[in-house]
Image 1 (tube, one colour):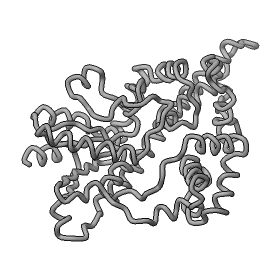
Image 2 (cartoon, one colour; image 1 turned 90 degrees about the vertical axis):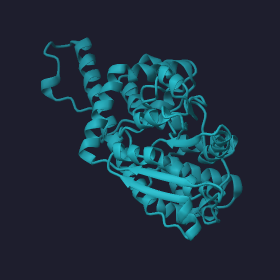
Image 3 (cartoon, rainbow, N blue to C red; image 1 turned 45 degrees about the vertical axis):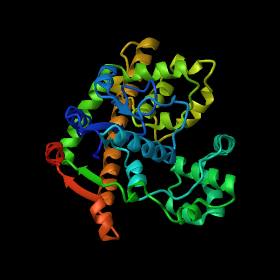
Image 4 (cartoon, rainbow, N blue to C red; image 1 turned 30 degrees about the vertical axis):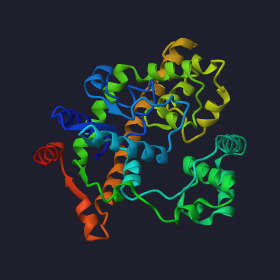
Length: 359
């Protein structure tokens, strides 16, 4: 496990070539079909040579819960063992790792009907109204979440509407982790590279994504699927920023018959905090030059999109560092579990590779 852009995939390929491993993706974005560039998904050729489990398993309109991930991994581990291989879990979705190592509370999955009702409520009343109601029914979760945390606020209300029990009460119930299996030993390799080096890598990878056509990929997704900005797939870093860019320039794709155009405009509502900054020196010199002005606005919006994506990716890496520190501080409660879960921390992939090859 390691932050984004730190070289996990290259190490996974190296280990796969040893013939000892099968690869299981631990990435909440790679599960989506047709989302390739913005997720840094291995190419079709790479996936043929280095097959990954849990890649391209759902459409972007669908959701994939942490509980579903844990259940799928449990079955895949058994399948790998039956084939005489070591399951190698590789990816950067730290919440998935926490679920495997610390366990999940028995919070029920949201019913589709309830999810749709809460989403409609959010669209009509705004996330502020949902956050205020959460304070009435679940003060513990309300105090823990920020008013802007749309995903977790809606999830908490979905659980409450469905069960009439606050999600905080569900989360207090005993957990059972996949890593608690006494017949298995878990080797955790956490790679935490220097941040300046990682920030440089993030910038380079984003440049590659823009050049490879990330904007065109998002447009193609909107043409093919009935997407909304609130869907988990469209909240992925990079995709979210491209959606905002398309709204800013009023791209024709948003007029597709299967899309609710108003949802996109509400999601990226214009206000003083996110107005495009177009200074006098950027304005076209010819008076009443509408096309030149539109081109200027599009160029500024494009640059802003790239800046926001860079910032969001760095923030993602920062959160991953926080998760990694939490994971590496996991304390085993018994001598038996100390033998089953061995956590090692490395500063680069080469050290991790050497450790695994030695093992």
